Amino acid sequence: MKKFLLICLGLAAIVNARPSLQVDRDRVEAGKSFGLQLVVPIQELPSPREVPQLETRNGFVFVGLDSADQMMRPSMEDMFNSFFNGGGRSYKARVYSFKLKAPKKTGQLDVGQITWEIAGQKQIVANSIPVNVQRSYNDDALAVSLSASKKSIYEGEQFYVTLGLHTYEHFEGGLQATDMSTGNDFIVHRSDLSNMEFKPVEGARREMQASAKFAWLAPTKSGNLQIPPFKFKYTKRGEPKVVEENKNMGGMQFHSQTIKQESIEAEATSPIINITVKPLPAEGKPENFSGMVGDYKFNAEFDRTNLKVGEALTLSISIKGDGTPGTITDPKLPDFSDFRSVPPENNISKKITGNKVVTSKDIKVFLYPKKKGSFEIPEISYSWFNPSKKQYEVAKVGPWTIEVEKGDASAEMVFQSPAAASGTPSVQKQEIESLGSDIRFIHKVTGASESGAPHRSIPFWIAFVAALPFYFIVSFVITRRRKHMGDAALVRKNKANKMLKEKFAKAREALQKNEGKAFFAALENGLVDYLSNLTNLEFKGMTRPQMKQELEKLGISAETITAIDNWLEKCAFVRFAPVTASAEEQAQMLKDVEKLCEGLNRLK
Image (tube, rainbow, N blue to C red; front, top):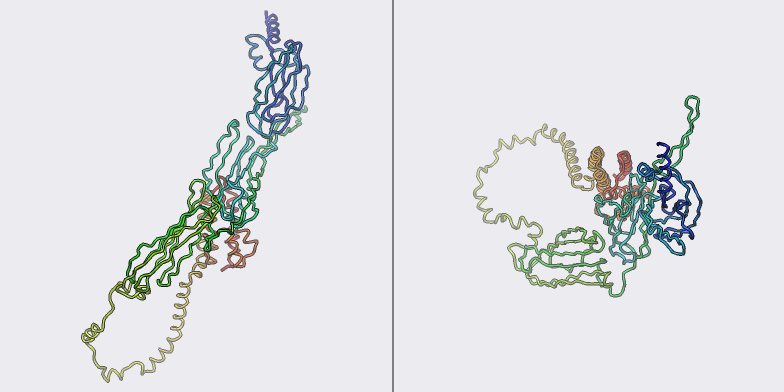
């Protein structure tokens, strides 16, 4: 009975064997060759028949076709069905092997369709053949893209660049930027990329991608400029390698093979971006051109047109536009010779609006009329070049007529000492006379008192002469201290090391808490503030090219200037990018910056 069952199962395996399609490898890699096999049991081969044809799609390339008869083992499905319908025995089949080359594109792709002409009629064997194409282990596991919103612009015109990151199946992590400099030919406003989010790629669940606007730039000169490649380092899974081992166990030799994949470090770079920068046209350029390029709004107004001598007149100016990020030049002001003025107040701010960085500048000019009268303030104009209209634009405000009446105090007194002019009145002559008549207890010095005068005694003069050196020493110390306290630059220099230690203490605290962005912020602020305190220059408000120029004027070596610039670039990137360095790398960076600051002590 058992023998009869096995015979039935064997017959069922032959009967149930059917044509099938299979790929000759577990992993189809982009750009590499692979085989697609059409397996047809010999007993099911149609006759008469032609050679089956493959019509490829989606970039797959047909290389050739081979055929051979082979003994085939049953599939897992047939093995499973053998418990119910019989089967499990090998069978002879004709194997048609289509040799193909996969496209560079990855993901779930359709190879095409297979047709077969049988008995003069064309039949479709497979209308769609889905294959999962994966990136080669030898290829980069990270692709970095950098694209500019404009490739041809005017000098000073604003544009933005978009950073894209694409990770593939064999990407393992450790993403860290090594260079994200945009060069020295642009003024840059960086975006905050801390919330840059990776999402699965449609049709390839093992791949992730993210993109965001990285920075807004404005060229500082015309010509053919370049944004250098961005560089990232990361870890990827290497190509599988067969490792053969021979072991001796109990006097017997055993041979084994294992497949290993090691993690290796790699680097990915973005392509260079070429930007063509056109000079501003000479035709139609206004006489007092501001130098701004973009779309601007300008307004100026006085808070009053009628006032008295001694009162202040405020001129408020507002400029707003999408040109060079963080920079707006001042308008040319009219002649205010009939007024005294104090240094104006300036307030500048930046805000990302839509796809542009809009910079706003508010200026307040305080004027004090010198005398009464009627004064004509001419119009104030502001000009810019509008690249979208390809022409210069001018905004004009005014003129104004200012009426000044006589005040309670002279303009000279109010300007030099407003508090005295508006405070308690000075003492008059008659008041002095009445005060003099009220002075009592004034009496004549008697002769006895004169004879007892101390300056007529020798001990007095001995004590007086002995006290003179102490007087000069105390006067010298007080004078030097007052001079020291009055010298703001000297005070800043003396406090430089103390403030630097505080910044480094914050950096160490952030390092212990594993707060990467806070660490690099403390590092960057510490270096910039240290330079500012040592030189009494405000580097925090400068662009990096301006910083380089100022450091060169101070006689700093080119090597040190390059080191400072590289550290500022690295710190700035990590603060805005969704990557950071390891704790060991951060600790080493802190030591390097401390060493760099020690070398800057000679500026003191």
